[in-house]
Length: 431
Image 1: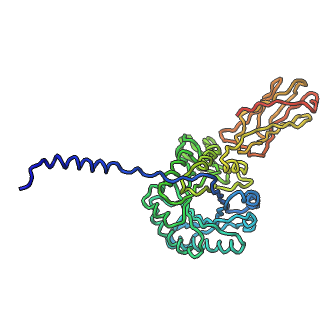
Image 2: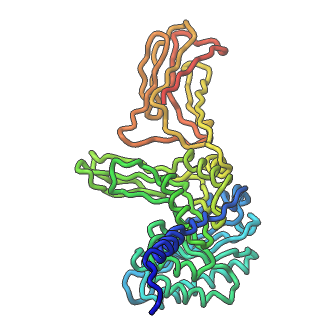
Image 3: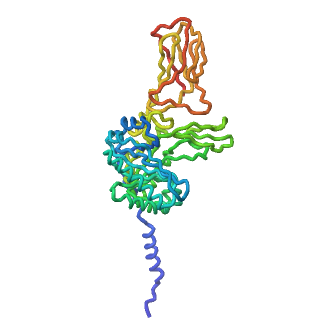
């Protein structure tokens, strides 16, 4: 017959206790962290190896742990058929003299059928590896740079697996570049599980978003993307930018195009020109922050790209050297006067970064003799007053910068009588 006790009254507290214990889930552990100086590498991303590229490697290559060199650019004009392959004429002697390992990067511009892509990538990388070995240049990694559509990552994974197998016998680690938008895709973890690590590119910009902060790398988003990547528990590096570009917009706000690396815009006369920059202060802050504390899975930095003399849209070396150390590059202008009649004035950028030209510069003379006439040079306009001259540079909507260590003529002042050679001038610079 059994006992007639209130069973519900006993079970209910037990069930509540059990449910309560289930609700007290253990909080997810925060990813492990690391601190101290980071591995820092640089991309050498030239299709045309001018002498300036080799000189830059000789002068600055030793500052990096390795140099990731564009080994080939592979592109299919149609799905079938043979690809177009550009093999930059790498100066292996310059790389050997730098005494740093080289990474070999295959850039896949447009992919064809998966099997053909894998075969082309394997063939090119093995050929360039043989060249490096013949030149006694140690190779530290293979890298594939392919901006795959984020919904096609599974297809990328499939031909990437064939590449991994085809290169396995070399013993050279294989990495891929990735975009932040891939991090949330279901296929992403399987994709990066098939390689030895990945490079998270946190530099990107939306050319359609006229009015947003014109920056190549948003430091807030960079932190968020790095934190998301760390939670996946796979080793990765972070690629930071050193470049800038300009975009043109029509009166209706429509983007007319972008210019980077080289070339000159041919936009309509009334185009609004916007400069997208890599803010050196923001990036120095990221480096300082990550040096102090970063996810343990974050193994270092890649800089895109090594500064080369003559480039228009890339940092100069003093800028990158400061940022690599986590220090904001110094900004400084100087005006130098050449004695004589007329007195010539030259503007010098004696700081560590490309800097926008000052809006105006006032040159004040200490007293008599009276100035007869003054004029601007190199695009500067002037307005003379009895005791000073104001120089202004009309930019006409396009930002004008002067590189560190460079100079430009400012203008001149002619006096009724030659001024004494020890005459000094005072200068007021308005940014």
